[in-house]
Amino acid sequence: MSHQEFVIRLLCALVAGLLIGFERGWHHKSAGLRTNTLVVVGSALYVMLSINLTQTEGDVTRIIAQVVTGIGFLGAGIIFKEGINVRGLTTAATVWCSSAIGCMAAAGYYFETLAGTIVVLIVNYFLMPVDKRLSERNKEDEVNEEVH
Image: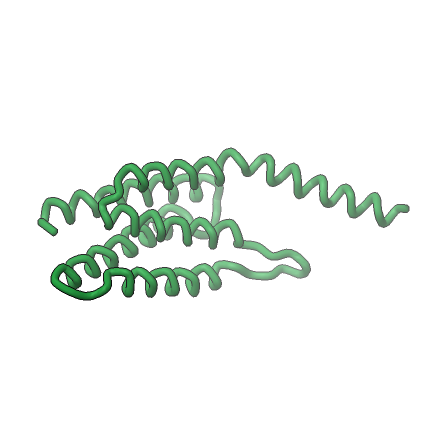
């Protein structure tokens, strides 16, 4: 991979991470701008390292598999329980998706990186009101069941 291609892929990952991170930061989530940007960039760096190390022989997917595992541990640290409520699942899932987007950018899949970023933004931004309404509805149903 040339230095120019390396920089282009890294910048693609950076922009994707900034977009996702900005949305999460805008909604005051624990993993916001810096966290998501670093996850995307870090994942991209590992994948590009893997690509460069395996140009002659080897399996590029070995490092990618370890990135997925590492992000799983990071995501597990984001999830916590408050009484009967579990918090951080969406944030952990977003970090997981951010890592996948970084891997896509590093592999040179620019359209796919853009599409993945847009889908994550749509899910997190536009489905948030629907998710809140469903949660409110579930609480209303629980109250109604207790009354009857």
